[in-house]
Length: 476
Length: 144
Image 1 (tube, each protein chain N blue to C red):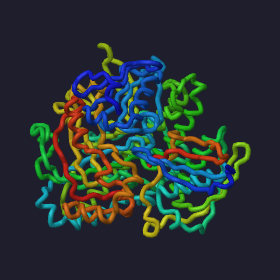
Image 2: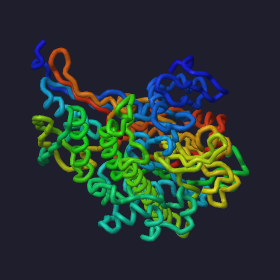
Image 3: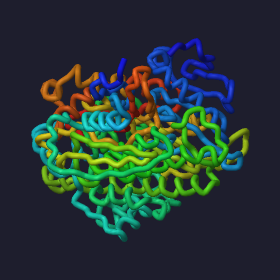
Image 4: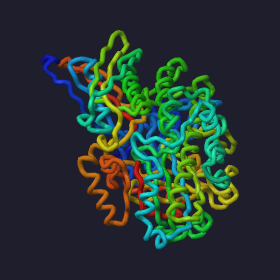
């Protein structure tokens, strides 16, 4: 897009002053190059978000922002319930609480190397991935309720994972305020056989090598050393979250007039936080967050089992689990006053800085780990939250690279089999049920995640700690 | 030009993160059928799907656009819950009520090589309209 549409506030901060129906300015964090490469739709969508009732400070777009539905992907916006603030299903997204978690293995690359193929096969056999895959767990009505209200803590009680995992998950593994009664029978039906499945699209399980350390002190606290092997899981709330998103998106679009909300675009569908519909969505969306947390917890358990079959006696500790499609009630300081705000992060990662009360003691000094997933065959990054990001973006950072090319263009340009062979020649093993799926997720179909992370670091949204390179990718 | 001269067809259109599905046909019903074929084509090659099973679908909405969204979401649900892929559809629309039969078969991962599952139809680029030649266009972005 054209950078002359913005006032450049500093090296990485570009502002669109409030105009027309905008209640607050819109701010994009980027450098001139990233901003030029962004779709004009990001401009339209972020300025539209700035018109919504009760929005506080500004509508923000992260350096990886791209065209979403209603909100841009990479959009952050906080709403004050006391000023008629709203909650938006599109501002959370269909894949509620889609996120990333990273596990330590205690192995280094030399120890992994002779067993790489065996580990790839074992992980691919153990973790259900791709369209039409089913989990080994069937949820009955009672279990479903437990899962929707208990999240990863419910999964732990069912025997998936370890008690010490919980403090290393946002919300300590259980999102409070989930109301399973607002989760429809259709959403439950979509989920009952999908627990512990990766899904498809850009979701994956990846074995990665720590290839570079940027901050030795924080890396030590995060337990990351050069050449260490970690395992990262990227997936979300599966069919349940998608169905909740689908139903409330429609409901909110139909009810906007009733709540006298003027939408610049129907896809910005939202409802007042204090309205019955807003409360119902919050209850259901929080249950969706629990579903995602439980899902990643079960996949963690399956991963541990698979790795232990190749490396008997091994222990996989959790580094951290982050979510990037959420709306959460948080305390933020506005003009010197503490306010309870509902922060939407659509394709953006929470990035609490040092000393934040919600962080476990181990991360009090460093800020929370911010896990930035790459795409298949590209780098991923570990960052840490900063104090400045509280002022910059309600403690939020980017979440990934974002696509540079549509799926259809990618399939025209690449063949799955050729990509798998090319990546194998670079020492990266890909396992996927669908070669077309591999082509759609081609590494070059995504923007350079390194450039996005550099801007997040320079903008003070989060600080770079380590770079991870893929070794094995199980692609959904 | 007579809209009847237009052969019903479908296409995909660009969206940065997701994908657009579009049906174009002489009648509203056929356009809805074609949009659904475009949806199948997001997941797999529709020619690889055989029509050995039939599923009845009914939905109701206040306007054609919401009806299209409901129609696609019904199919997403059938695929998600019953593991079905469809290659052919028969749609009737009367007074905002859609009654349809979708023909297809169970997902076979070897045969269909499904690339991606669809999470849902979005309101983005959701449009149902008649062109100057009388033909109908029905389209939206699906989240994958």
